[in-house]
Length: 509
Ligand code: UN1
Image 1: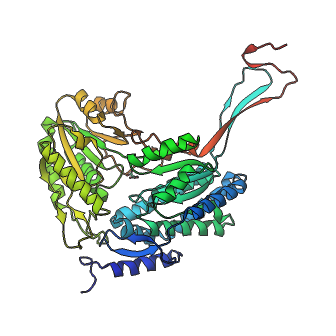
Image 2 (image 1 turned 180 degrees about the vertical axis):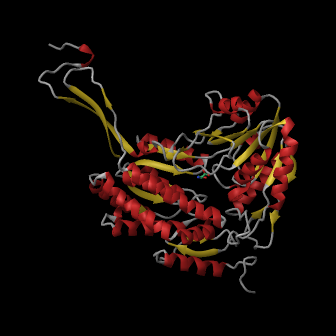
Image 3 (image 1 turned 60 degrees about the vertical axis):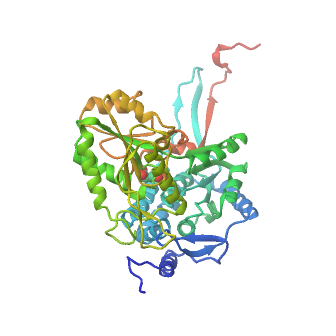
């Protein structure tokens, strides 16, 4: 049988991955115990070395050593590494994108978009290197100056997830490096090859501009590797993306050693559609947000809260678009929905659908597995389920393409329903009514870290701060002033007088 887009074979996908890695300048390391799978066939491409705890300790040590030098390099000079990384990413955009497709199963357009997101954050970080501003405040004492200074924090541990295997690393690394920190990266064990490619590109960028390549360390393996980062006092900030369960395990441990945590955990993102919404525009936004990336974004739209008067029209359009979505090999340009990452994700989807139906949900479309790619590859048709109420299963995040539809009559009740879930990452309202839009963005509106008007919940730009509230963990990364999490603040009072007045008017002796 010959290899075609309809009939991909693991050995051909591996050959392609090896070629891409070679072109990206990464040598395939010796084989080990960590499998690198492709969700396209479910087969194992190759195996990699899984780092021992001693090797993890040594990597943290190298990063800590490198930090001592790196923190005194002027920030605009540190940005040279990030500028070179952006150049390399621009040259290799399509190659790295294809590797993301092979390992994470994302369609080409989204995979290349993810690499673009890396380039965007690099550009942001380069500008940021000249804008790490501290404030100057008026002192209450004569002849005194009061100000704050931002200093590099230390070693940053980055734990990233499979679904954005390269962009989330770049959000953290580009910003951390210009802030004067060094990075130890533990990628998802599901995407070791893309991690190797990123690590190689960054090391090359450092070497090309004469910077210390040890500012970046890559450690690969399972949760025992990540656990080392969590427990090590030398890791000043742990930036972790993943499940709420992971965050619950990690956060108390980091807190117990007075380390800092930046958590990006689950989302259970909702959108309200009001009667004045542009239904055509809403439908397009909803389909991308709910079915894109096969429902495997933190920002994926999972709950639709639609006014009774709009639901018929809207569902007809969205379900119609769902019927036309091509599900299949993400290397095929005409495909819009690639595979789920693995069998566990498929089990999660199946069980959630069963629970939703048992709760009185009515399946509008989708949910079935698409065969033809082998027993270990899990392709599904994105599902829409109309729910009589926001039951327990709807309040949970299932990392698969299920869109639950609820209806409302009263706008206040819609907002209440929207906020009545434990997670608080992203949210949206589709409306033509300015009062409703403003209310959604107000203090008593959406309780999420991201609240959008007339666009979907996913696909945020890097310029804003990204993150969410409640069980999403409260972290903010990427743009705006998220850089502050990667630095420490010192408040400085300078006395340039020959007197020693005390604050609060205290007289002492
Ligand atoms: C994630 O799913 O972890 O807003 C990150 C988005 C992307 C990032 C998603 N820019 O959907």
